[in-house]
Length: 202
Length: 202
Image (cartoon, each protein chain N blue to C red):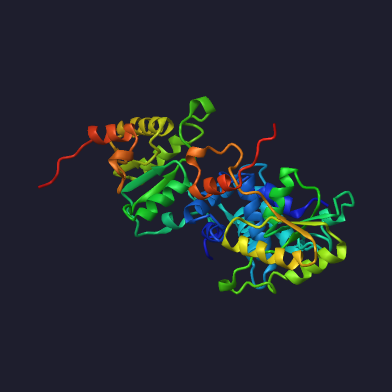
């Protein structure tokens, strides 16, 4: 029989950002916890994993992860049905939800345009996204893709598709992060923050 | 029904060194993997967790984690039966095994002396450790506890218990780590490395 701890270490090391050393540390913590009275860490975590594997699908409307056919955000009638926020992944959706600054709906692309990796508009199903925007009558589409080459290309592509249909397309502001110190900021960010400087309301 | 992804995030965040943000990143990775054809990450990890919870006990001889009553190291007749290495945890045992520099046997304390936290010699079952050392006739006990207050106290306590029985007790050397740069080393390490300097064999 293979060593169960070694097996757990190998499985944990498949997770992103977890190397063999971290995996070993986590595994020993889990073993220790599972041996102490009243702790159910290993079984609880195993249960949560199986439940996720069993029950998570994609919302047929916005492609968010969900357990039914439609996610809780799409099901929420109080959300603003005029603004749609397009994100690369569900983690991005979560970040925007946590900011509390957006009350509209989402569309998750599950990726960004990367022609060299074989990810084009068809893979992201951008046509279906545009159909949804037009059919549901959104006034504004906020393209919240990442600030990198793929995210920029995706935002530009989407804005071209939608602008010809007369829909306002915006992007998240680029600049100094809140609490960021100028001295330690990378030069690209400082450059963009300068370019996109704003008048101070007096 | 509670959101399975949220539940998985909460369970992952119970692991040491994994905050809510890392837990979310891992959870989304797992969900994404579990939705792609042919990936069994979530189920494999769950299976490894359950197997660990079901099967791992302590070696009745050295207190290492194991699946039978006796661990593979204690079962290995080729190991040197004259040298015993005492460690705080199984992770420490693993680190020493990986170094390849020790071929003796181990004793895992599962902790270090910390009177303020209620961990005394009885909690670490040091008497049983001493009994084992005497009964099995070890010549040398290498106390490989950590280089901190608890580890030092534990090493000192063990050395007093064993010295009176005429058994050689040693500790790991303290000094500059391999590849360490003097300029970036903390002053305590530099101080100890100076104190414990060695003559260069010529």
